[in-house]
Amino acid sequence: MRFGDRLLTWLTILLVVLTFVIIPVHATGWIVIPGYGFLIVLIMASCVLGAPAGLGAVITMLLGVALGVVAGVVRFLDNPHLGIFLEAMAWITVRSALAYVIARAVFAPGRITYHRIMGAVLVYLTIGQIFVGFYGVIALLMPQAFMGLGVAGTPKFASDLIYFSFATLTTVGYGDILPVHPLARSLSNLEAIIGQLYPATLLARLVTLELEDRRR
Image (cartoon, rainbow, N blue to C red):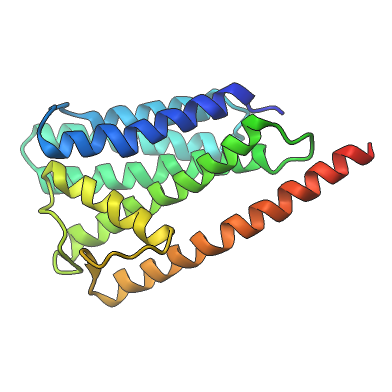
């Protein structure tokens, strides 16, 4: 496979640690890492550069990095609301490019390996991360779009968005954070549908790829 097999596995582990360990711990106040959002953007962007991503994906990734840099400058100039908005846009942009590159590698013809399966899991996690960015943009533009969401600009805000996104993607829906605005509800429905269709589509594609590889 063209995209480094081991890179898929290590990137999956990294994303799991960042999403389910670093960000929640940061939200509790146990550790404080200024600018860690931009650091995550840079890590994801470097992974896109390390793959044969194509011109479109590279341009998209560079745009995301540029948005991240501007977001950092804006927040330094004491405009946190605009800075968070730009950071959310950078989050969406870089993760979209990453999801495209990984999906193209995972679903390409060839033998199915452990690392490719990990890459498929990574695509699933990245989808949840993309919706985190979208929810963040909605929450910033329409503060009353969600009930039970942390205040924008606080560490709890990012943690709550991640929690809500993956609860929606997996259709768990605990109900402690609720979409109220019609746009937020529509986006939540879309994520829930993707969360249901992706595993079935993934399984069918991987089985097809394995059967085709065995016939060769």
